[in-house]
Length: 416
Image (cartoon, rainbow, N blue to C red):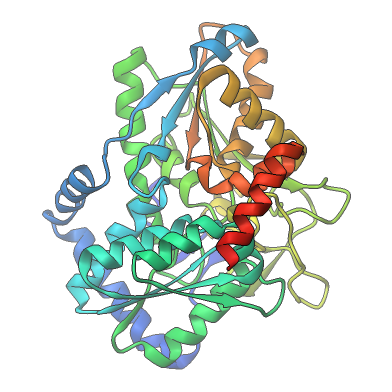
């Protein structure tokens, strides 16, 4: 089967998932955005303009790094990493927001709103708004504001107004709800810069389109480095943007196995996790403008989720990934908090890399499976972000008394 995410029979649907379930008041705005995106995508000058912008502003193409030490220690497959942490603002999020900034300019919008969990999307959106001269408001769960304080600081310094959301579980799903409420009352001059491949059509398609730059680069770079393609590729899965960014480069290569890794939190049997596609806990429903797998109860009310990584702590998942799972093209696994902290330590000590806690989920599964492959095989991991934003959480997870005292002191200073 040949995969083209932008050519499905029912517009906005991927198999039985997706759609655009929005209030009637938003329909004209959604239709305007859809037209603008389709026109941009069909404009032969638009993608080259996007690539030039990312090359001069965000350090693209990001490189691939061969992890020689871990490859040798594990004695299995050769391990490579796509370095999205080297993007401007420290994560893959810049790809999507800069692309949407170009769309905003085409549409004549002057105000950007965004939701954020780990804060990387918020920082990227605030950066984009500063670059293009837009007003910017970022909605962030109050729980995430506390555990991602450095990113809140940078958003504010970039000129964004950060709005802590105190409803619900005070995490990403609640920030999305607040963004939608804002958009209903401000759609004339406002664009919602949704950060992942979720939400109503055309957002999953828009975000997947801009993030595809990761997979396009990775496929070309890997062939140049090794003369072939990886046997497996890995990415963490929250909403799905970094995963689909990488996966799109290899969907039509049957020899490449594709693996997504979700957040198992404190354990799949504890109820404190954020896995939608790797366990039977989730079910299909409609919320936040689209149809997908959600962690919900029998009445369709959303359950609380949990993950050490704020960016994976989300109740839904991309409709595109749901379809790819149904078709057997992507395998899904899950990594616990404890495994994530262990993998993070291992990668730091052996390779000098500091992946974000989100990215470390992909490392967990890749490092488990690498020894089962032969040395003439290879795997590629998407390091979707850098870990400096997670310093408070990691210090707590490592349970180092001296570091813990230092971090608590710094956190108190930030709060003052």
